[in-house]
Each structure stands twice: as structure tokens, then as C-alpha cells.
Amino acid sequence: MKIDAHQHFLDSTRFQYPWISEQMGTLLGAHCIEQLVPELQSNGVAATVVVQTLSSAEETIELLRLAEEHDVVAGVVGWVDLTARDVGAALDRLLDSPGGEFLKGIRHGVADEADPNWIARSDVSSGLAEVSRRGLTFDLEIGVREAQAAAHVVARHADLPFVIDHLGKPLIAPEVDPRWLDSMRELAALPNTTAKISGLVTEADWNNWKASDFVPFVEVAFDLFGASRLMFGSDWPVCLLAATYSQVASTATHLVQSLSRFEEQQVFERTAANFYKLTPSDIDQKD
Image 1 (cartoon, rainbow, N blue to C red):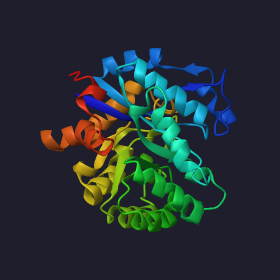
Image 2: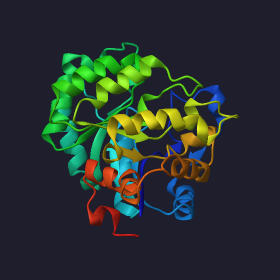
Image 3: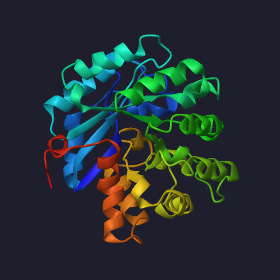
Image 4: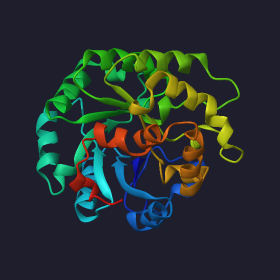
């Protein structure tokens, strides 16, 4: 069984996505569950964790409803305004809404904030404490610019599990950026961090990449985190800018081919299940 620990749903006919640029026309229109399910079935993926794309409680409520209605969605990473004074109440409203039991974590587009130290703000820290009190997790959507501040925050919130989306968004180039390497070392040294092998194809040349381009970065990830702290995510449909779902899945399989069977299971299933506290009923025991 495989778990896709990072995918999205998009519908530009209903929502506006400020992060979709003119070069991302592929993402316009609807990318919904009916399109995703055949891709999952073709690649042996039994369950997914769907991740927010908007700073919107409305989107999160809809994702929770989808999780309640569709067995394949095992968990939701939603959004709340971490700076709001009533963030605790906002989290409780999500947890009490239809499908609220599928809320596994929270994410905010930290890399989209103008201030690289946004995540270290005192009001954000208070919001993260509320996330932790409810037994949820936090997805770190950061790059090198935000990594140092993020590391300080992760250390401060030792009881809150953090997962680094897209391996911290390294620039996929022949030489590994030493700044990215240093940031990953600092974050990996903290025991409450995990990372996602996801989103790498869109950090490369969209039209001219190959699986071997990612090997140095994934090797760093395995050296620093180990298989028990790494999980696979497709980043569908954002990955469509550079690759099909099947290409992403086969690339991930190629990147872990030197691992033991047990380590592969950790990357493709167990790490995500443990991190997001996915129960057999969440996954519907599909194998």
C-alpha cells in the first residue's frame, strides 16, 4: 500500500489562486478528485493527504467534506489564520465541522510572506501553540530564505510535529546549494521534524529534467533524516507543470531503489501514517 502525503485540489472557476502565475496555465480549470483517482489506481496509491492551497477556511471546510465523502482522502492539512486572537476557536470550528475528524494538520504559505521571519512572530507562535494543543501537525512550506527562522520556531515548539514540504524547495541544479544543505542540517537535527520527498520536479527545469537530477538532494535527505522521517508526496496537480502523476511516482520509486523493502515502506506509507496519525478507518484498509 502507498500513501500520497501531499496533493491538492484546484478549481480556478470557483477560487482565485494568487500564487498561480501566467506561466502556470496548466493549473487553470478544475483539478478534482474524479481526475485524481484513476492516477492513484494506476500507481498503486491507496490513500492521500490533501493539502490546502489558499489562506481560506472555506477551502479547508470543503476539503474536510471531500475527505468524509471519499475513502481515498485519508487526511486534510488545512488553514487557519495563525495570527488571529481566536485561532483556537477557529481550529475547534474546523474540528467540529463535517469531516472534522480528518483534519490532521495546518499549513500556511510561509514562503509567500514578504517577511522571511514571519513564522517567528509572537502572534504566529501563539497560533502554533493552539495547533499543538489540539494534537495536530504543521506543514512547513519554506525555502532557504525562511529556513533559519523556521528552525528556531521548530525548536521552540518541541511538542509540535513539523514536516518540511518539498525538501525545503532546493533549486535543482548540478551543484547542491550549500545554503540549502546547511538549512536542512539545522532542521534535521531537531527531533520533531520530518520531510516530504515532493515537489522536486517543479524546482527543476520543467521541460528538461531527469530522475538522476534529484539524486544528490534525496541522498542528503536520507543521510540527514533517514527513511523513518521521510514521506512521498506527488504534489499533484502542481506537478503537472513538469510531469505526469505516473512520472512523479516512477521517479520516486527510482530514487528509493537502493533502500531495503522496510525503508521503502516507511517512505511510501509508514512515515505518513505515523506523522498524520492516519488510522485504518482513515485509510479504509485498502491494500
